[in-house]
Image (cartoon, rainbow, N blue to C red; front, side, top):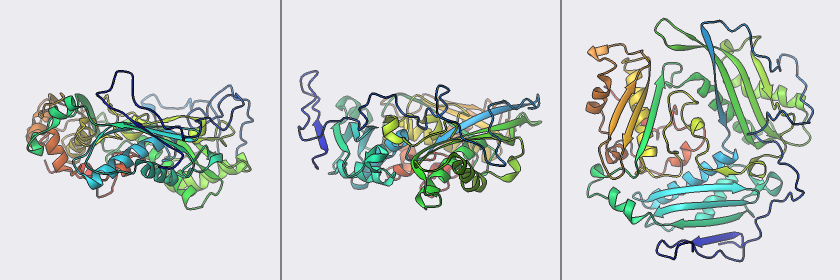
Length: 458
């Protein structure tokens, strides 16, 4: 370990309250700004009305206003979804946690991993429970992930070369392990009690809500123009938000009509002007992503509405694994269960069950059984069979093949083996593919590894 690494050895048999001794070699975990000033604006608080920073001026063609569109028809409604870049502090933590999962699965596909990450100015901490036969250089995995996120300079609040790294891991509780272990993978019990949801609709080719899809693609584009040098003033942290206007069609299905508003907060270099930020974001981020037919002269744009976003990332906000569950899933549509997705191997049904629920929902909609639906699965720790299966089509069931809203759950149970071990086997979830899921959503993706996105013939 480098002199910037602290390893804490946890022993479950040790005296209560004693968790091991930290090395004395690590530098003090002190933020570089010790002036006592209030925290600078970040991607999570860029709309703080108390800010005294001068607001950006607006280039030609951009409407910057906080006034609601009072001409929204009575039969329509507004719905907003948000996303963040891969370098947002919470997403950085998700990425580190999933990088740890992949490192373990690469060398030992049977690894049991529950790894949480927290980051702040100059420090990354991982903690949790890992049982694996693999020998992992956790420090290197962490530093590589921080580097890939673009944090390579102390001025950005985190430098992969010199940041403090603290590792505090122990093995999985034997009480939990004995409830999951089985002779055959198909008989494996659930790693925890859990309730999970999956959602699908017809709004986009990938069967995802359009508000969420556009917000996610905007944040991915925001990172892309930083990494390929298109916009050299962009820094790693960033956040996007899209509000869509929807109308209900004759089948009672929400249908996207237009983009009501777009908000982008992009961390930037000190010297760039607000006018250039607004113009560049519109030209190089919004226009390549949002279909022109959804934009009109009433669309509202808020580009860096705080007026200044120089200090960002972990320097501005602490990051934590699992704090962006709606970004990870469906942008606020459908429902979300009680557990996060990243940092867990597939024996945890918070993850594998959520993937199965999406697989079911997408397959039902793609097969024409309904126009949209939300699938709920529930599990008890140590038990293989799900406790319950529920399908809600929001009244859009088409009665295909005589299937009613009430009978769809039974159809699901006959077409999908929802035991955790069978989900792991069917979706091939012991592969080191988890880091790819950590940013820009676990669902609606086209990569070959995302087998839960492959429609099943039912």
